[in-house]
Structures are given as structure tokens and as C-alpha cells.
Image (cartoon, rainbow, N blue to C red; front, top):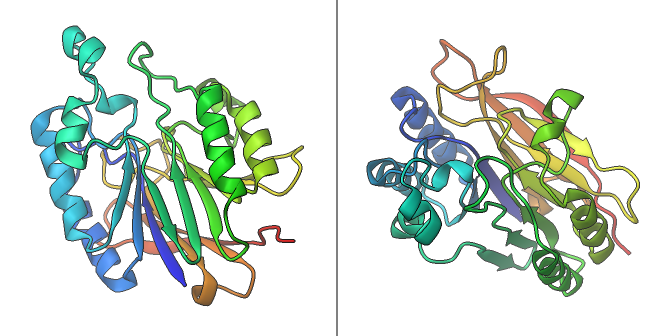
Length: 265
């Protein structure tokens, strides 16, 4: 039985302290088994921003699986960007850029989609696609199989198509074939649960909004996702809950719930 809290794009350096406290209260109330931090942890990859992010994650009281986003690579320090792009991230979150979480009912595979030579857009390599596929193929039927990236593999509308992960079509086709259930992402600050069409088996893209940053899209509140599986959801189903904290509110509130039925033999 598992409850996962997906926190994305907090952009520490632009965070709202009241929202950080609200996020801590949500985690204390929901008691997630795992926190997924899906990139753009900081605004400018500066050491104090990474330290603030780490302190916030430590307050959530659950194991953490994190990946960097494009904002977590130095933008203006070209020497650091080219030669030590992940130094700040590693100091705060450890050396592993593609961590894995395994439990009896969960398999979570992280993919680092950032590239030092790209300012904003992400990409996934053939080697990454195959590494993830091999791990998915070895999963048990009891495990919900998640892949975590930063840039999205599907978007709600054409205005965000430019932000799609480079290589997303090949990745989704291969990962679905290998048994993936969900691909979690962020980057566009727009929460959504989207079926990925035309694949060998059902696969959904689960997008999270920005958790605690002032950098919200017009008309879109700060939000995080809670995912429930096993005893915390109906049999054979995964529930994805969107929790919003709108301007002027002091706590995250349940805004939407989507029930998914992962394919099983």
C-alpha cells in the first residue's frame, strides 16, 4: 500500500514561505510513503536555494526521490555549467541523478532529462530509454510502475507542444511496451492527467503544477499531486489527486481526483 506525494517546480528562490508551511502540513496529514521531486528545484541553481529546498524536503518526513530540472543547472556561470553542471544539486541531494525506488508494490525509475548544452528543453537518449525499459520488464505484477522525468511527455494543448521532451514518442512507445503505467513530469507548471495515445498498452502522463513558487501560470494555482495505490485505492486502480493552494488560501485542498486502471496480465 502506497501514497506518493509529487512535488514539482518549487523554484526555491521564488518560494512563498506560507506555501512551504502548507506543504509540510499536507505531508503531515497524508503521511506519504515517498516524496517525488520532479525537477526545477531552484530558480538559479544557487547554493542557498538548494539548501532551502533540502530543508523543506526534510520537513516532509518521508523518503525522497529527486531529479534535477533545467533550472538546477547554472545559467550565467558558463564554466560551472559546462564542467560541473550538477555540483549544487549533488551537494544538496546526493550524487545519484537517476535514482530508483523499489518496494513490494512500487517501482519508481528516475530519468535525468536535463542537458548542460540546452537552456530549457530536455531530451532522453536511446541508452536511457533502454535502461528504463529493462528495469520495467523485470517488475512484478503487484508493482505500480512509474517513470519520473522533468519535461513532459504529453501536454494539454498545442501552446505547450514546444516544451515536450525530445525523444518522448520513442520513450513512451518503448516504456509502455515494457510495462510502464505512468510517466510523471513537471516543467510547464500545469497539472494534468493525460492518456498517451497509440501505444501497446495504457500509459498516462501525470503532470504536476508548481508547488510553492510565485511563478504560477495565469489562472492556475499552486498545486501538488498525491498518488494512491494498493490498499489506499480501489482494487487494481491508481488514484491521482490534484491538491491546490489558491491565492489567499492557507492550505492545500483536494481539487480533482482521477482514477486509472493500469493494465495487468
